[in-house]
Amino acid sequence: MQKIEKLDGMPTYSPEDKTTFKIEKREYEGQEIDVIMRKGHPGITIDEVNKLRAEGKQVPDFSICAKYNPRTYTATKAAPHIICEQDVACVLRDGTKIYSDIYRPANAAEPIPVIICWGPFGKRPHEGQDGWKLMGVPPQTVSEMAKFEAADPAYWCHHGYAVANVDPRGVGNSEGDVNLWGIEDGKDGYDYVEWIAKQPWCNGKTSFFGNSGVCMVVWRIAAQQPPHLSCIAAWEGTGNMYTESLTFNGIPRPGFENGIVTACACKNWIEDLGNMYLKHPYYDAYWRSKTPVWENIKVPAYVCGGMCHFHLRGSVVGFRKIRSPKKWLRLHRDMEWPDTYNPDNMEDLRKFYDRYLKDIRNGWEFTPKVRVDVMDAYNFDYIPNKPEKEFPIARTVYQKLYLNAEDGSMTLNPSVKTSELVYDSKTGMASFGIKFDQDTEIIGYMKLHLFIECRGHDNMDLFVFIKKYNAEGTYIPIDCMGFDYRGAWGQSRASRRELDLSESTDYQPVMAHQKDEPLEQGKVYELDVEIHPHARIWHKGEELRVEITPEFIKTDWYEDHGMNFYTDNGPDGTKHVIHTGGEYPSYLQIPTIPPKYQSGDYKYKG
Image (cartoon, rainbow, N blue to C red; front, top):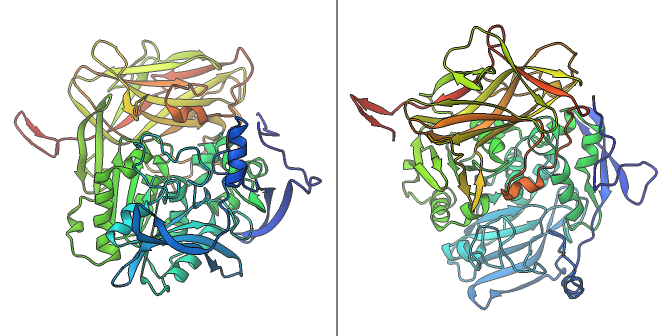
């Protein structure tokens, strides 16, 4: 088994290195755990930014530390109706001061609700960034008042809301050390909610909004159940930090979080998630402290998930597991940023907020509990915003497509003859396909159940994509933000094949990540691959193809550039084997959706 001793681009923890690292002792589940803290990037001012640019150098993302400057002022000349209270201090339960910029309508006739935006990326990113912009969002759509991945005061103040851009503990000029995505963030968020709800201009109702990194903390804070948290809008938020970010289902990928640790403006210390992964390679009490206690979340919730984004798994698991009696899910085919600032979606969110932050009886409850973009080809949708009552959809028919290594096909019935497909552990691929004889709508979780063997090593990694090919055999991608995107995906590490039986369902296998079980030579093992939710139509004559690779194959899709995995596939010459047929009934399970209504040849898909 491969053991990772250090990570590329990251200083390796050493107890002797007191300038780079310190240990903070914390208790999780009754265990005392040494949490590694790394000395933070102190942040750079606008003067330093201008100097770097004059020298032709790049300004690191999220490293801007706006000057501490408490004041109240008119937000911009273009928005004289908005005032900003800048660098307002909130004292947390342990005496730590954190700072926020609070934007609100200048002439509000009565107390108003507040939308809180909380995350480690800096509360005034426009001060120093080279052109305030978001990929996929037209220039000047979002004002300079907005925090990265958060609510835009230019829109929300116009509609009678305050927006609080918060620098959490340790970020920017806020005191303390930065904690990332855990229970500590949750407790601090609780304190902030209860403080801001008591401000004289506030009506006592609060919510959190954000996507991606500004959404992930929403789950953690809501799980703490602050009394004045009225509802949440959680758009694109990772849930389980271990299996969705530091690793992808056990295959290490700590570089993304290390990038945040490295770049975040922090004058003190920041939690070093990469080095914590090296010290805690299994899903233990430390990592569980970073998974939301879903059942504690009971306020109304509007949840979104993008089907081309790695936040998808957490978004859907969160929607399924929270105990909110009033919850809505929208699964879309866009990237998080253009989806967030799309005017139709902003207006939709405003209806939700008007209902639960202003008590306006606007008929929001008529909104379908679940809306799904059923994708087809390129940027064409088969059914946009398909309305459903639940997710997974109750009328789903799960169908097994059995793999046949002899000819690379998939069939409805398993072959009685055993066969094997052998591919190289570095550059090879296994591919299996089926052409549908009728239109087939797939919405929900797919699962790949394999019988595997590794020849020449004791482990193997599998990266799986579910692709679409037309009747002529041409690959048909999805278009997302101008890039080709493959389709549904999943990953699995063979040595982590043990299932968590308390979390797994028939449609979603969940790995326990409690130990490594090396593969023995000559032995065949069963392995389940969890495939993240998807929604797509395959028309009659089109082919669904499963493609399995040992390494992640990057494409032009921009997220692929950050997918740097530490795979464990053995030395050159190692072979991976997929066994099928007979005693090895490998299969892909797909969630097919029958028509909502059928009369003779007429079918209503909905």
